[in-house]
Image 1 (cartoon, rainbow, N blue to C red):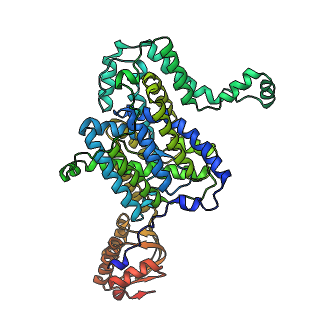
Image 2: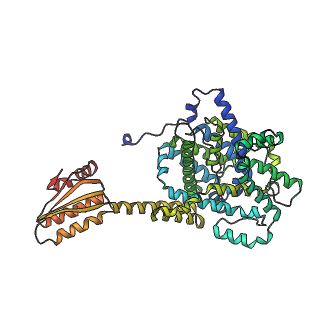
Length: 547
């Protein structure tokens, strides 16, 4: 019996293939790209952790440890792993309900599950999630991320934000009187700067040539190549520090960031705890798998590297998520924004992702004390920008171009993600997808009458005769039972694509009705799958004509 099982996926990281023919030129490209992404990851990792209800160092060391593991062991050449915006809502909810210690256990358990998904070659199943469901929950998460940052963006005096949507709105409305103009100013300038900075020097080529002759402007143009989040972080932190603005900072809320490496700690673990955390574990694993493989597909489209190996990628994601909790980390997955930055910076192999992690580690170990001066309103502005870019808002305007099925799946997943929970939203989306698929396939199946010559009825079957379409055989049965004389029925199955056991049972009921009236049932033009099922079940032996 075990011999019939599919073979396990081989554990072969993409790094092993990419190191063949690796040279100094490729190393230089990877070093430059990795350093760039490492700098970009700095504000994002802190912002994601803080928004998730964790300390900023949890995000930083997740980006370092998980980022290194995912690049070294993954199934893609240029994907960057680490904490992601999609996890903010999930992690915050788990921390609120179960606590940080149980988040670590759920993350480690999800890592084991992700590894098993890859090992048993289930990576391709993630591709079966409909795009409407993915867009729905992505836009929903983006809305929740934006809402979660309103407190810090407005500088509201709220000790702790609740996890659910309506409670957050109520809490914000109840504390709007503590609005901090300085915090809002920093956050608004940050958001505006993130939109403007990349376009600042996108001018006509001849005008650029004239600007380059001015030394000061030329220097500014060189500065414009710096990542926008880093520029916002440094410049606005300096403004807040120089003018002693009364705004909350990382130092005032968290006491700064420890300069040393995190200690290895084992969270309190028991089987009872694991059983209690089944839902959070499945949520983290599902979201991690979807995000990482979607990111890998984006990387395939943008880069020139070979296509990703989904099973190897899931195994690497699993190992990373199983390891980071022991260092106080949070869930990690593939990150689209950093991956795109990596590709556009010239990365050619997983070495770039490993350099990104080492760069980030160097910055944290050498400059951690400076992070205490970063205003939380600036990080909130960064996350507002991330949430805006994360959402595919144009899809709402395009809904009129699609079917009612597509609209129902996307809008319902979006609303349920916001109001209830991501897990419920994905479950609802998948259930709707299955139900609507069954309905669509049942509409495709037809049993059209071809001729009625005396006691001979001939019908042609089209599509798939399965549990969702068997009702369309009932009119034929009813016509046979209503006949006062014996009736022979011939079914032309040349257009019958597939048949399941429920469809076979419907044909058996037709055969019995025909036989009861003294007639015969015949089927001709069978394709391979329906023929095989009829023969194996013994149904073919009872037919008058079978070919």
